[in-house]
Image (cartoon, rainbow, N blue to C red; front, side, top):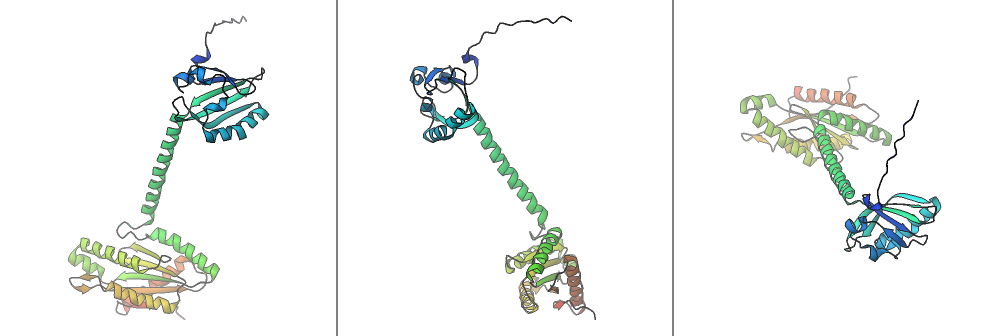
Length: 303
């Protein structure tokens, strides 16, 4: 098989490359710069020739140049992708990427790339990341909250309550779970319309949120039902809190008639799952409704 080799005569100079080409002697004195320094970096060759290459760097970059770049170059015989700041011929700061290697003739061959556009791209990427992070946080909040009341939703309440119960079990703390149910809410909806019902739910949600501590968990779990989890709260303090809630809810009125709530309470004084605690509170609120509504009942285990 015959191989045909075609030879091309290539005519080029350092001026044809889209980067700053610079040659210094072993003492780092500039002996050559290409036209990139004039066209892009706005340095006239006669100003640079015979000067130390660190002439073009900013004060901070000179420190890095002397303390890191040169030792690396002398040890490794090359350095790559160094991000530095230079002053262009007009005295303006300019970010550049610098590469260098020591040739067999002991001269140092440098390349300078204007990194302004890359820095702008990096800034845009940072801005984009910030926007995406904000959007992700917003989506997370939407996924965790009830759209109408802005309280926690059922799913998020279960997740956070489970964590709170686990922490309470480790620290031997008492946790109370309150289930609140608005009395005769269906009648309110049927009589005054769902918009009025929604207004009541939103007002109640806001009042519950303002009354609770930052450490408490407050959620709307559906319809007219709400949950409140109180960490480190015994039965006596829970009862006092429920009495406050009854008074607070009475400030919400429909045609000058205060609304009322039934509250069922379950207390965990040892390790207990959220599902078990929830089931007890559900039974307790049912008992409150059975016994006349507008009252608080604590879960009592059947003996």
